[in-house]
Amino acid sequence: MHPGEPAPPREDRVTDDIDARDSAGVLATLHRLSALGAVASARGFAVAPPVHIPRPDSSWLEVRENLLDRGATAAYATWTEWLPAVLTTPRLKALLGRDFGRYEGTRDPAVRCRFAASRLLIKYTAAAALGIAAEDIDIAYRLGGRPYLRGLDQVEVGLTHTGELMAVGISRMGRMGLDAERADRRFDLDLMRRAMCTPAEARELAALPADQRAASLLRLWTLKEAYTKALGQGMRLPFTEFGFGLARGGLRTPDGAVALGDEWTFATYPVLGRYLISAACHDAGLDPAGDTSVGTMLDRRLLTAMTPPPPHDPPAVDI
Image 1: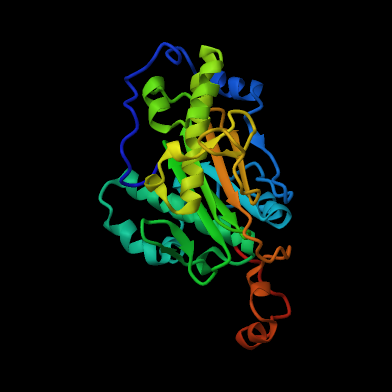
Image 2: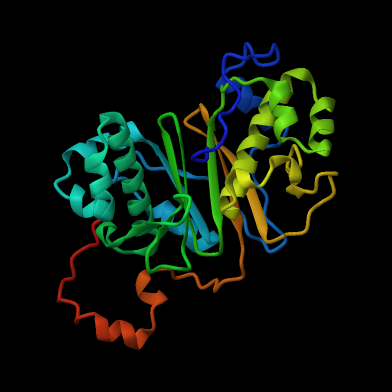
């Protein structure tokens, strides 16, 4: 969800379509509709499934390989899984860096810990993808609160959280947006359809069996959130002005025609058996070189001047 956006329809306004739904039923419906997973764009770019990273000392190999192979990567966890790292690491101040003051100034313990866990996930994910220490990642914020990595202009960051879930995306190809929702979220189906659907999407929803509409609408919501986050527009871009195919049709105009923009790819994945994560990734035609370590993002002569000769047995990077 976006900070400051209008609250979604109240969860107690439940229609008959979704009254008996649960996460498994929603995910099964989307699977039957072929609405889960990703489709490569005309450029061959596709969004890899997000990787579950339950602890900082988990294996980060798949996160880094996804960035190398596809240009974008994503990791997710629950903030409670990362809570022990927040509470026990003696390096918390160094890891949070400029965010440590905000952490200390947050009075609510749960909010404080969720904030710290999400920033640690950003830093460890970026560190794994870029091949540097987490302490060396400096998070800054654009207007509106979108995080970015100071000094790494070619690297884009996406962040989303809902309930216990938090997810982070890193892209070296262009803009990236993520959104997550509980698969069993309850909402007023008719109200949501009027507020966010294009005419073409409304027609497609109406043609579906009643028991499939809520799942499809929930997926559309997360895709639209992810796309507007990637654009940096938030709710300033009305959801009724762009659309998606209900299955795997990609970006559409309000009347249902295929929109220009084969540089965009989209995906929706189920995680933890109860959440959906949608991603929107833009291929801006940046340098597709596979090596994304920070060292190779700098001029080689400059890097040599900045870096002392390595010791005989260089220490392992702590990520």
